[in-house]
Image 1: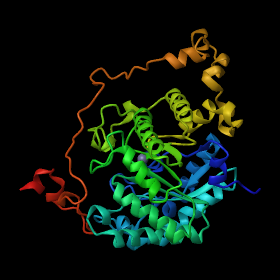
Image 2 (image 1 turned 90 degrees about the horizontal axis):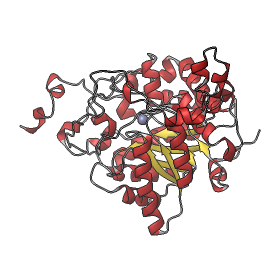
Image 3 (image 1 turned 180 degrees about the vertical axis):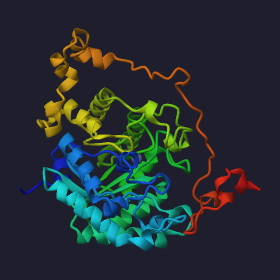
Image 4 (image 1 turned 30 degrees about the vertical axis):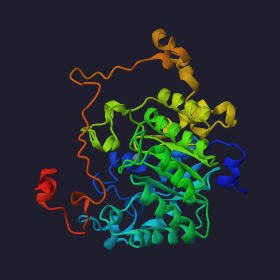
Length: 397
Ligand SMILES: [Zn+2]
C-alpha cells in the first residue's frame, strides 16, 4: 500500500488524527519514570511501547509518533539519568523509530520523528550546542526513514525556531510540524501566542500549533489567537493541536506543571470522551486539520475524535466497533435506567461529579516565574543535590 504523505493529506483538506500521550500512559503502567520522563522504555520494554502504538492505531490515529520525547543526549544524561551512558542517544532513537514503523505498517498511519526542548537551552548554552543535540536525533530519524518531523513541547519561541531550522537542515527538507506547549498567554518570555505562531511559520514550519501543558478548551483559545495572527500576516500554514487529556481552567502561563496536582494527583481533571467530541468539533470548525492529543490523552479519547468526525472523514476505526457513538451500545444493558442513557443528549449534557467531598474545583498554581537563563533552571549531569530540592528560596539568596 502506497500511503499519502502528510502534506498531501493536509493539502487535500483531509483530517489527520494524531496519537495521545506516551510518557503519562506508560508511567502509570510502570514503564516510564516521572521526573526525567525519558523514553528508555523503547529499549527496556519494547512490547509495552508497541502495544500503546497499536491501541492508538486501533482508535484511529493516522500518525505514529516515535516515542522520542526528551530523547536528546543532554536530557538522557541530565541530573543523574544514566540512559545516555547505558543505552546512548542513537540506540534509543533508532529503537523508537523501528517500533513506530512496525505498528504504522499495520494500518494507514505515517511515522513522525519527534524532538522536544533541551536542557542545553534552559542552561543558556546557545544555538550551536542546542542544534547539535537535535542533529543526533534527526540523523536517526533520517536513517530510519520516518515520514515527517515534529518539534513539540517547546516553552520558548527562540528554541523552537532553532529546532525548526535544525529539522529542515539536517533532514534535507522533510515536512516539519512545530508545536509549543503554551496557552493563550504566550511563551515563557512573554511572547504572545500569535507572535509565536508567526515566528514558527517564518522559521519554516509547514504546520504550527500547540501541544501539552493545557487541556482542550484552553488549547483551543490559544490556537484561535495563533490563527488570528497568521491570518493578519497573510501567512498560509496548516494548524495542529495536541492538548492534554486534563481540564486546566486554573493554569497560568506555565500550564499544568505549575498546578499542585502535577504529576501524581491529576486524576479528577481527566476529560471524558464526550469532552473530546466537543474538542474535535471545535478544532475542525476552526480549520485545524491535524488533531490529536498529549499527556493524559488515552486511546479512548482518540477514538472519540474519530467518532465525532466520522462523517467528514468516512473512516470507522477498528476500536469503534466496541463503542457505538453516544453510548448507544447501552441499549444492550440489562437495567432499564442504564438503557435510558443510550442517547446523545444524556452524555452531551452530563456534568460529571468528582465524588470527592473535600475537593475544590480549582487550584492555585505555584507560579515561581523562573524561565530560561535563571540559575534555578541550570541543568547538569550530576544528581540533584539536597539544596536543589528545597524550593526557589535556595536560588535567590
Ligand atoms: Zn504532554
